[in-house]
Image (cartoon, rainbow, N blue to C red; front, side):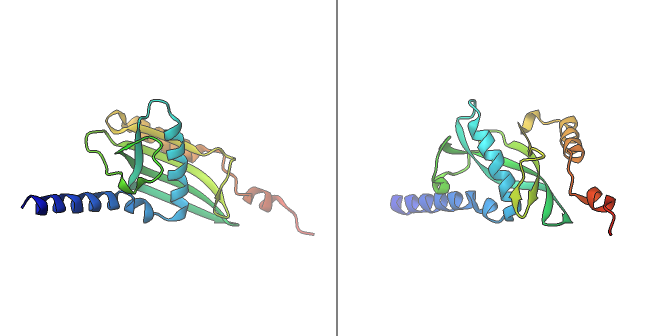
Length: 161
């Protein structure tokens, strides 16, 4: 009986850890790039001790004005795992339920699928209990007001000969 219980516990752990990266794996590559940028920034923060993984998307926006340019906005949640910061193989990192979620918003420009350095990608993350409606609005406003230029004004200003 104890062996059967141990087997069920091990199988449940495998299912939970296998599902930890499943949400990330289902993301489109365009959105994965923003999550990766965010995780890089989060892992460089001295105060972070746990390894975090993508948990779920809250909202996404993808504007494609043409010429292989895309403007991306992604609001998503990161969740702490039981692994320590810097863990390379995350396949055995089950999510923790005793830590608050981190709500992140990221916006950036891509050209031909590559994140552009200009304008600088905007990343804002905060623990869920501290997130306010004012912060949510400020995030969206910041992304809407970033100095994006797809080249359209230049094309419209040119005079054909």
